[in-house]
Image 1 (cartoon, one colour):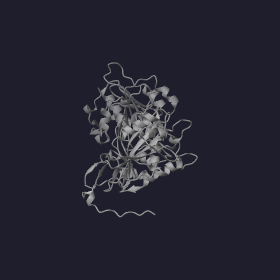
Image 2: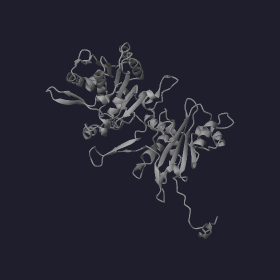
Image 3: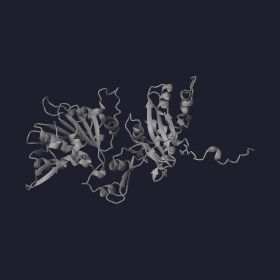
Image 4: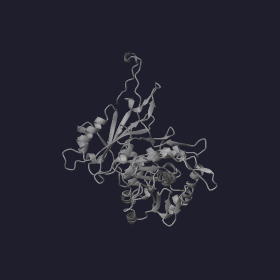
Length: 490
């Protein structure tokens, strides 16, 4: 069993015979957790500057030192990337470890017979170079630059001989940018793989560990950030915060987290922006602070985008705070589900809430030859709806308004984080927000795509929601209260 804790810091003698630490796992960057994990497929995700390439290479080195005749493979998409990230360092590291590096085959050879092959896989056809091999460790550096096809076929070479004393593993590091970002998120982070297409996929076999830039004490973060200021916004977000924001994103103003100030400065901080980790609290007029969902007088709005198949039906629950800030705290979705059953589910999920309005997709009021429209079916089952306008330009304007309006030094819109299946939280809304793109023919429009959660949110943003107002009960008996003057009607 691989146990990096038995290694600790990897100390060697340098060229002068002096002891030096060649590598020490950094707990702040979760490198110790990365090395200790027994997950078959593990991804280290984070912005640039968090030591992912070094961590990946030394994970392979540690395994080669612990097991005789161990075979490891480290991949980058292109040869120039391979040189910059690994080949510039491995020759000296092997000399210090008592081994040697073969420049002709790009292979690191250890005294105990273990090897690390450094290769690149630039085209889809290059995967066939690895199919006949067998490795106990396969490391994909910058996984988001590989296609799913390349990842699957090369990963099939991860095999361990019987009685080897170890299990073959796949290890990866990546930042959020790259042509393979979508499948990488689906497999390692969101666990939204289509089981009809990949029936053997087990989400427990694919995990992610995230590291932040400010956790790297060895990096001059101030200079690093300064060097990124002239890059496109989506690149800055990916390389500074580890956020997934595609180039041409419609909602480039959407940010889960936001950086203020420069690293090392007194005002430097990274705070939640359009995302909040949990349902927020509210301090009432009596000074009592509770979760906003514990108050019966809060206005709760629902927003519904209708779909059956292949598009899902989506419902969001939004609390409107007294200061006009909106908190999206819950989401649910349905596929191939009848309107009556969706309505009954929404009603059941809303028990105990003071639901003020349910803004909806305007197609729900179209009958199209049926006796009842979807909206009428909803109303007959306890969910009356208010149709909004279908306009992909207005969708964007309405949501942008909520994203950029500031109230009490925070954006008007906040979305509760959470995992799929949690009672509260909006993982699909948070996931799809940065994925949506501009219409190529009309950049004012939101392009078609996996937009159902954001479109539902747009219905709410277009709906002129009224802020909550705390109800108060007077201590003076009603019969002692002064009468209000009668209003005369013309």
